[in-house]
Length: 536
Image (tube, rainbow, N blue to C red):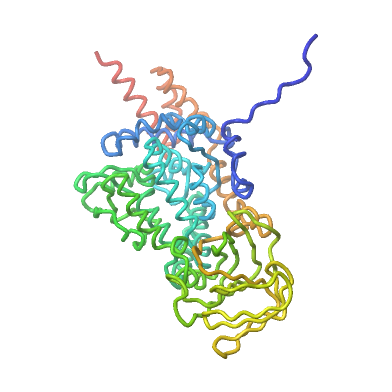
């Protein structure tokens, strides 16, 4: 008797990687749609990878060439994420597809989890030397190979966590949106000079709007000068390991020229600006990958995530963004810090704050897990030792000079709240959440439970593929005629089975497209290969 029940299909390696993601990160994932890559896009990949591997054979970090194969990346065609994930699983990593620039908090959280965000699109043949937009060349052939070095792979995760925990300002979001817009415009084959100029002006305006250099901006600079544009080894003869260098024909050659200054890696890199629209005039050189951890340790020590106390409150206060406070007893309080009242003196090392006010919505959590739905009003944190009754009226006289009275309704909810400090009345909400804490161990970027916050408020800004991004991709695809696509397919077939007669016929047909330089380059390469094989 036949079995009419179909066996359930197993999830693909990429789907397994997606299924392991927290729910709030999955909505940023985009399918690769491997069949949608055009023959010209595969030719772009071949052109770049063959030249890169030739150029990097002696100039890249020793793990680069072996790392390509170890992470499922070949030279002849755009890599499949499924093939990459089969290899990456053995390294404790995975890869998921995304579209363009995703929010920095999402990118860094993915990285801290050991997940590469691979931009599924590939650069156009017009921008084959360098592109400011994330693409599969940069994300796969740039970032993935060095993961074969376990020490570097660990650094990348920790660097991601530091970026994820750093506090971002409201202006950082405006800069992110401007960068995302500029990358889309520059990759649109029909974008006008005026549109490009306007996008560049928007980025300059967004950058100029920054009131100060945030922790998040410093974290992005550290990442840029190491994971993206880092050199390693001898200062006089360094090797490439940064993804931006390993994935760019232009940068890979330019970075080792005398015109690019090479300086020893230090914490100064976190204070050094960069420009994504041009090749870099100066690069930092790490002694070895252990050196990366030394600098990262020093950087983490500057972050509010590690320092807490007054420093963390002041950082959160000027950021004007959602962050979370680590209070006594493992309580995490997520919201916007809007006020800090100084105490008479120091209450604990690094803490001389009597009262901090957090604007709602406020989310209470422990161990990164939300305990209830967000509180719509304000929350107050009074610092110092004191006790509150389980229910009923209370009065608190704290060493900070703070005196509070009110009625405790629930575990943290109070009503009829009044207060003064050393006789000076305070403007306090009459209904709020009230917390007592002897210390403030941490103030970190974003919500303590990103998943819960995302369910209620949609994460770090509404995100989805914009109309401009979809339009740019459609224009790239439609710019390749069926005839041209067919020529690229035939050229690809001749790479596997060289045939002089077929090549001459193809070259004759390709003369009708003299401006299609990439096709002409492919055919010239094939002719040279056949000529070499014909020599005695």
